[in-house]
Image (cartoon, rainbow, N blue to C red):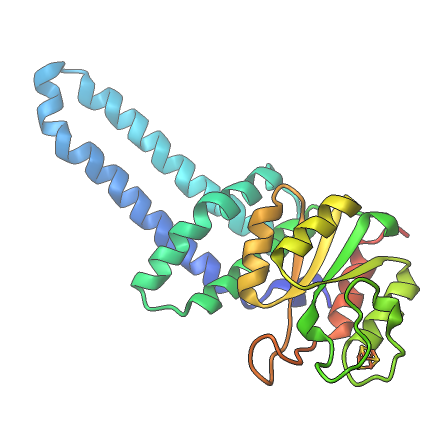
Length: 255
Ligand code: SF4
C-alpha cells in the first residue's frame, strides 16, 4: 500500500467537512464581531477596529490552518507543525466535524473512516523511520477464526498456520520484519499492551469506531489505522488485507 492508497480517497470527505466547518467558524466569528460592533463604538470609538483586527486574525488562523492541513496531506510532507496539526485534528476538529457531518446527514462511520485516513496521512507525512522493536502491530481478537481451537490472544505464534484466517499471513509478516504483533480482546487490554511494550508507533487493525477511539486515546503516540473487513458483520470472523499491513511496515521500518 502506497501513501496514496493508505489515505485516499476517504480523506476527501474529512477535507470537505473541514472546509464547511472552516466557513461556519469564519461566519460565526464575523457575526460575533458585526452584531456587538454597533454598541462597541459607544464604549470607545476605536473599539470596533481593535475587535475587528482580532476577529480578522482569528479568521486568518482558521483559514491558514485548514489550508496547511490540506497541503500537508496532499503533498505527504511535513511542511510545518504537523504534530500540532494532529493534535488539533484529533482533539478539536473531529468532534466538530462529527457534529457538522451529522447535521449534513453524513454517516458517522464514513466520517470515522475519513478521519482514520486523514490521521494516517498526517503520520505518514512525518516520514518516520522506526526500528522493528519499537513498532507494535495490534490486532482485534475477531480477526481469528471463531472456530479455531487454538487461542492466539497472548501469543500469536501459537497459530499452526492452517491459513483459514488472516493470522497466518500476519505471523509470517511478524517474522519477516521481526516486529511484535499482539492480539487484544478490547480497548483496556490494548492500552495495557501499549503501556507494557512502549512502542514508538502503533499499527492498529480494527473497525472504524475502535480505530477512532484508539487514535484519540493514544495521542501523542502516532497510530496508523487499517480497517478490518467484516463480511459476517461486526466482531465475527473479520479479516485484513495482509498486503496493506506489509506495505505500511515496509514504508515505516528502518532499513
Ligand atoms: S490461521 Fe492460525 S489462528 Fe487462523 S484458524 Fe488457522 S491456526 Fe487458527
